[in-house]
Image 1 (cartoon, rainbow, N blue to C red):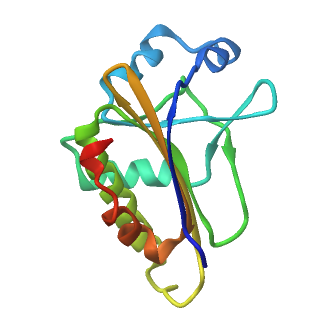
Image 2 (image 1 turned 90 degrees about the vertical axis):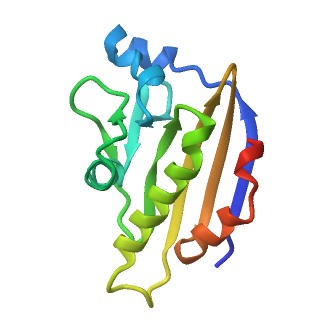
Length: 162
């Protein structure tokens, strides 16, 4: 199974999401004061979904690292886009600073290995996007590929140059 990683400069605008879902200023402020934040993906004009693994991943993170803050960019209930396969569809992960990027990648890697326990011989794909906020710039790092090579793929990247 091939693995693909794409890194690019972006300018994310959540205003359509905030408006269509009536997102309060308190919830919007999570972008500035939460270490790791699951954000929605737009489908269509006014539909926004969170990835299948969003809740389980955040619970996992809170249990493994209670000293960091984790959250969802949503008011109350969230809409989950469920895909039925053994593929691991991770949330889009907003990382508050470049210092936290290696930590976020490590948390995803650990979560993947937990999901694979007992199913190591089954082929599985991971799809995850990190959005890194560093000063006034934003970068997206998208990984789509083999679950077993996730960590090795990121070890080849100089995360200090993000």
